[in-house]
Image (cartoon, rainbow, N blue to C red):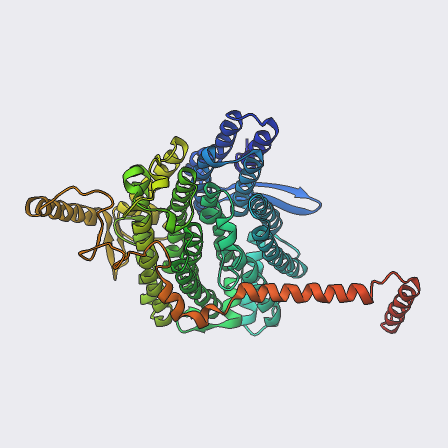
Length: 617
């Protein structure tokens, strides 16, 4: 029996069963089982990855199917692991059967995207994923869901047009055949031949795919749907929305390399040491890092903070992909794994905070480390990982991206990447203090720690953040198999690039020793006394009305005021104005053209017939 269709379909089947049965307890068991099946089968199939793992059927002359390679296995495992933890978290946070149906449906869609063998299967799975995630947002916020839906429709039509152009020229839609035809076309063009695709056609296909994949990844300036969509839905589900579904766009850019790399190089050449088409992706990724990071720092709602933060972190992945070297692409995939793990963990933490307190804004939090020690421990892991602090997985992947940028001597991209790390510290410091330390509002005095399903889900992602950080070679060795050669050398503890080296285990040992020494010095030499939670100090000064601590309210207001001019430039407003103009034009056309007058319609028909006759039809 071929397991590939079961991997893709099992979450959808479980979602429908959970929706139909409507029995609390039973639907949760079915939902968890439906999300666990893909994970179990992917682990089972791992030893067979060296062989040919495909499932194909012929539908109306089109070859449709699924495939499992080292690349698709890695992305499918991202979906399966984070998807399972998100579904586990929904045991505590899901409102009704609607959410179980569409959460599991979106998991089926994204697994189909990652395992697709051809462009038709890829597109169908893409639309299933988009529709299901739209329905999840619609349940919570109609405006946010419509913004997401409209931009997704634009991306979907762009992709469909690109697929149509490819089929019109090649007569096939399977990835191996399309890739071979583009490679042959590139060789023909290099030898002075006319080529199958003109430069204009190649540019058009590239631009359409850039639009389609950029929307889903949340790339600047197509990111405007993500903050509202990520924050206005079940936050356990957002762990999968941000951690997994955004990777569909990332995977799409990788697919662009697989299908068209040689053709795009021949047509557009290089910019400095990067391919020109890739540098465009990388530069937009750099802008995504900066814009997402700054807007994250300015948020007063923790959901919006991590929504913008997620956009910013996707920018790192796009920078790595755009540089286009084997090292940078492997680093980008590594960071895709890291992002899924720490951002998935963050949104489960946010789900726990909202579930236990009902609050979402910084001004309503404080002092929760004492009341929620387990959740705080998971937050501490996520904070260190996102900030790129060793020995967490976020450091390993960011270090690889930094090294790839520096090695290719791309200073502008390097500046963007380093700025993103700096702004990341800024908003994480606020989250750390405002939520977990300081004075605790009286209305959250009796807050309890995470419920068991969310605690288990957070524990899984937290453990993976630590394991893949201390033993980064586990990931690197697997990613090397995608390229069929050693890009990143070393062992399971060490990453060795030849011009740089990182040993996660050794660094962990030295940091542990350093912390122990610091603790001994502190407890032996410091006059420690226990103080109440209301006895707080900042920089040695007591917190009084004259010296007020405002980290929970408008903490970055000076930054907002300094950037007032730039913040007035809103792509969200631009898209809204464009849409309003289209609506106004459509209304005008309806009033003057589609006016219900039969004689006018007869004239329309006569004019069309005259035009057709003049064209010789």
